[in-house]
Length: 175
Image (tube, rainbow, N blue to C red; front, side):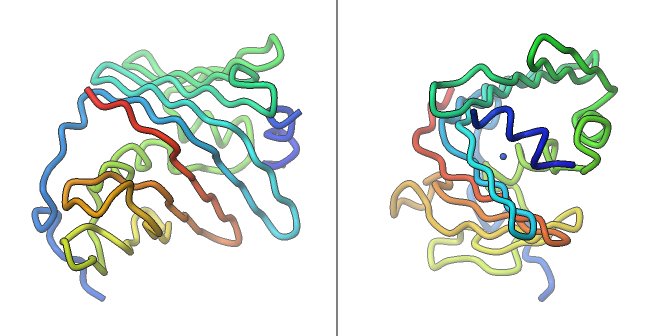
């Protein structure tokens, strides 16, 4: 049920303390990238723009012709999905994903994981998270944007129950 819905967009050991990695200002950022979703033999690729602010988020998904095929928004009032002229609402992103896709996606957790706020089970030589498990997901940061200690992730692999999400981040706009 997950991949057919998103296909319309193509025509997303003991834990070390989080303090081991420098805290980031997570108040506002924009991520531009691509998301590959794989379940069994099905694979889907979508373009992604994620606008994050302290008061909410907006995610635009698109295909080869650009963003805007689907839009997800979240704020204190709840979550909203707009696609093909239809609107779906729920109290949060997880319930919205379950309602729309029949699959819970880690959208709330992903915001934290993207900025390094994860209980890492493995870190690199600079103290940056490389591997973690959270909310049933295996999170692996495969590449960072640079070799600096405060660099943000550039390639992240998420897996749970036969579902794989690979997020390639082309550019971050921070602050």
